[in-house]
Length: 195
Image (cartoon, rainbow, N blue to C red):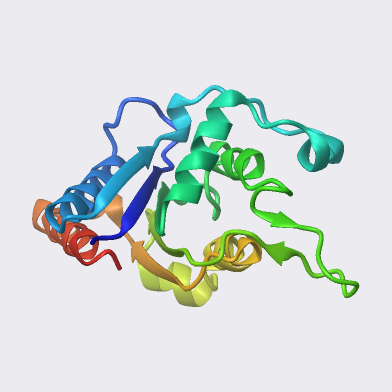
């Protein structure tokens, strides 16, 4: 039996006209060809407020659309998060989605006397796919891939989602059609292998 894969298409613009959307679709296509079960979440198509108070995060109730996403996360064994790099980080809408979705009581809970939270989403793995205008080595080595490390360590790992693999897709504005096609083919291969 194949993996249960949840693809989170994190581009904040509705319509699916961006390369990020094509990469997410290619991964999904490959996963289906590899006989994996696939679900997709597009936060840009959901209606949810941004959290503005710690009390809302800690004790608030997730909106109905977010509760459905939590069900999808519980169902999944592998998460794929695809997004464009904006100002060195994930777009605010995607961060807001994670704040709404990965709440205490769902993704983690109060931990031991040492203050470490209990990870409630153990047993899941992830792949992060990030597109950017700059060359990928510049982001990885000069900037230290700081925002991806934050997503990997401070969000996913905090909840128990590990290991996480990362694909950096750089210089997207200047890519040739051949380069774009190669990346789409790579996403299909990764989806088929569910890695």
